[in-house]
Length: 198
Image 1 (cartoon, rainbow, N blue to C red):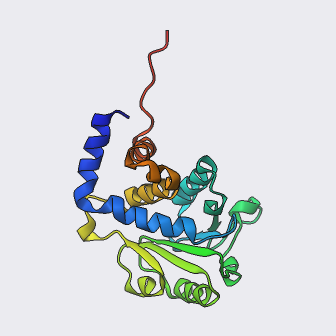
Image 2: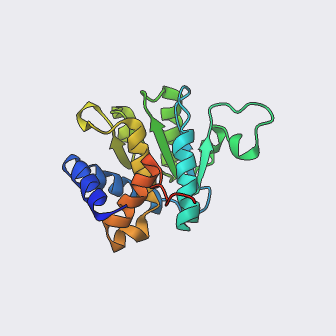
């Protein structure tokens, strides 16, 4: 990514405040969990956050941040699913201090989820919410990032990309925004093409 592209992306995102909001949320995400696998990621029955979980896992590996390694929590896992894809809502009952629960909810969170989130909070887990403006969920969250009608041009999917990139960019942000924006652009659009092959 050249200086011109970085400047253009920065100019596009700067007036929206999304870079700062995503960085604040990502910092909470990155620092709220003390153990690998202690970042529990759950969605709604209709929308499991596969995409965000995969990106967080990648950022954990690339950035050398084991605490960012997520555990996908599913509403129901099919029989015979691999171990890492068979963690059910019962895992939320075991959530404790030193762990965090990220609720990714493009729809209103159902009551059974809110009850489990409330229980996890009382057990000492840090609650984070990425949602579209769900007051009940946000009341339970220690930190929330809302993607609503007033946050255009940010889509819910783009916000997930922004958060996962920012979560893995802790040390890079200390050196400046340029490397972080380069990684974000690569994540969203793919890396720049290399030289032509002979």
